Image (cartoon, rainbow, N blue to C red; front, top):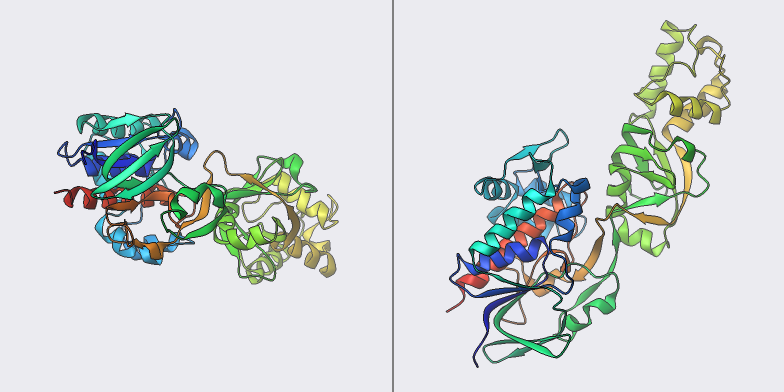
Length: 409
C-alpha cells in the first residue's frame, strides 16, 4: 500500500493545528489537515471576545486539573509534559508577545486573536503541511499499515496514522463514525452557557454587574463565586458560566429549569449582618437606599431595597429588624427561576465525547487502534472558561502529534 500521507489530522481547530505542527516534526513527515468546513481555527478567532484567551496563568499541573469538571484528574501527567508554562514559552519563542491579566487569563499583547492564528498558520506553512478544506470525513477504516479515510464526494485519503481533532458534537449521532471503530462515547451535553430567566425583575438593569458574588442551586452541591452580570435575558459572567460547566450534566437532566440563589455581596451572612449593625451604629442618619455597600452598583442596590420594601427615605436608625432581615435575605439569597440557557458568546463547548478510558492519556493514542489518536474536545474533557479548554487543546495536540511523529518508521 502506497500511503499519501504519514499522518492525517481530521479537524482544523486549535488541537488540530497544534497536533499537525508537531506531527510534521519540522517537515520530516508528510501531514495533511482535513477540515470539513471552509473555515479554519474558528474558535481561536472568537475566543475572549476576539482576543484569544490562549491559556491561564496556572504553572502547576495539580492546580490546572482543578479547572476541569470532566477529565481533569486524568490530565495531570499530560500537563506535566506540556502545561501552561510550555504554551507561553512556545508562542513567545515564535515572536508572539503575551500578557497575563489580573484574573489569570493570558492573551496576546496585540489583543487580536489574528496574532495567534497567524503564528499557527506560519508554523503549518513552514512545516510543509497540506490543508484541505471542505473535506468532510464520512468513514475511517483501519487497514494494514494504516488507515483509509473516506471523504464526502467519494474521495479517499490513505494515511499511515490518524489524529482526530474534530471538536465536540451536539448530538451522539455525530460520533457514529467513531463508534463504528469500536470507541465508546459519553453522551454530549452543552457546557459553558448563561441562564435565561424570562420573568426576571432586573432585566431593565442589563449591563450592571457585581465583581464578587455567589450563585448556587439550592438543594444541590452546585455553587460558584465570581462576577455576576445582569443581562436582558437573565444572568451571565464567570460565576454563572463556571456553574453551568460544573453542573452541566445535572442541568441537562433538569431540562434547564431550576432555581438559583444569588448572593450579590460575595460575603457571608455573618459579615453582611455585621455591616448593617455597623451602619446602624456609626451612620444611623444615612438613608439605606442611598448608601450602597459591598461594591453593589447604586441602581442595583436601590432595586434590591425596593424588593425588600425599603422606601427611599428610610434611615438606618429607623430600619425595623424584620425589614432588615428581609433585605439581608434579598442581598445574600436572591431567588430566581431559570428557564432555559443561552450559548456563551460563540464559544460553544460540550461535555461528553470519547471516553478517556479508550485513550492512553500520556500519548493520546487509542488503546484499541494503534496509530489512531484523539485530541481536543472530541474527548470527554471540558474546562471552565478562562483559557483552560485551549490549554487542553495545546497539550493533547502536542502529545498526540509528537508521539505520532516519533513512531513513524
